[in-house]
Length: 144
Length: 404
Image 1 (cartoon, chains in turn yellow, purple):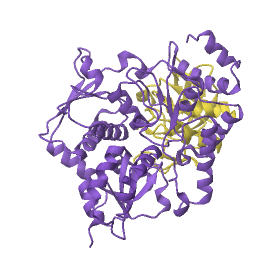
Image 2 (image 1 turned 180 degrees about the vertical axis):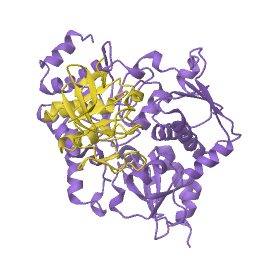
Image 3 (image 1 turned 90 degrees about the horizontal axis):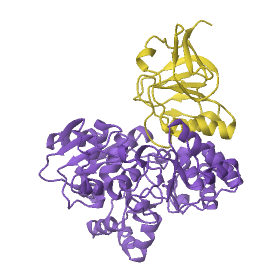
Image 4 (image 1 turned 90 degrees about the vertical axis):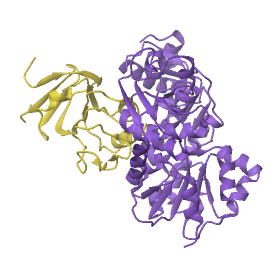
């Protein structure tokens, strides 16, 4: 396999790239974000105070209320969502929000899962990640 | 994924544009989570409170209504962000209008306007073994565990899509093999109070996450109220969608809840754990409480009748609000029976069809809340920035009615 490339499973198929925002903990969208700004407001999160807008958001899995899909969808509507999401396991809440973003607003957020979080230890916060839909992979620590 | 010819027609649009739109979401979720097929569901319970749906949720519901969506199966709805008599309160009109739009949109699609987290007590009562598609984590835990109907924690958006198509991907708790117990919970308590059921749920949810706990040591005589509180707390502190209780819940009476396998591990619950968790659930150290909430999950008729007896001949003190949360159906019935009038004489107030977890309590400027609900105590400090004291119903009443 090519250097700095990890294969996964594409849920929402599109090609995007952006700066990495990394959380090592399960993440909740419901009450965990301000969907009108993209800011992380969950005080228990390890990325509290950071912003997910236009980032490639890396976290192991989702948690929290089943309304999370609508918090995510609102962030998509207001253009404050990440451009892509990289998970170990994508929860149905997040998948639902992303599919509706595509169906309702024709805005595609790339989602890839089955990515082993330990292999992501090499990714540095803020470095560029590229999600390739056609190759079902992510490429990380890209020089711009 | 295999689709029947009827389902293929639904997806291609011959059953109307709304069914086509909703079916696209249902099928895509099925493909992602590797369902072999779709199943027919018998009922749905959806989320439509503005506080969580936001404008995007309104856009989505509006789109469905424009396309002519109608619920194919009986469908109820979770509490609203507004109490029924919102005009007396501090919620801004703009916010209220958005919630009212959601009343209209859901009604147009045929959603039963009960606005309650306990539809299994009135309005939407499933049967053992039925496949249903419900949102609302506490109701999911109750129906899977206590009734033995089958549902996953259905996300907002997928819930109404299930109602419109009558279909869900056959995954998760719809499958026998995913309903087997995983972790043994030994409850070593000589006596279990009503509040302890909440606390046990809270402890277990935190420890097991999404696993299925199997309780040993809970008496057959426990009430449905106890079980709904245990489930709501476990679904809130963790993501428990189902639990078994040996000798109590149906699937644990009919067969071995572990299916002859060994539990992954065992957790013991004793008095010291209960005490520690009870303290942990109180974030407020000083008594600056100006709000007492009772009714998370929503009170049933029997719980309301009991509350009437507990409040008899008492008066709520002036500087405290004593808010009781219940569904429209329970409230109306209790009113017919005179229970509501008796309770209102004390100065306690009803918050019908809303709930302290999802109503925008931050608009009111409360300093501190006392509650007998572990779910409330767990969620309100983080979501509404109001500190909480977690006590049993007797303490709540004596605090609110005692003059200083």
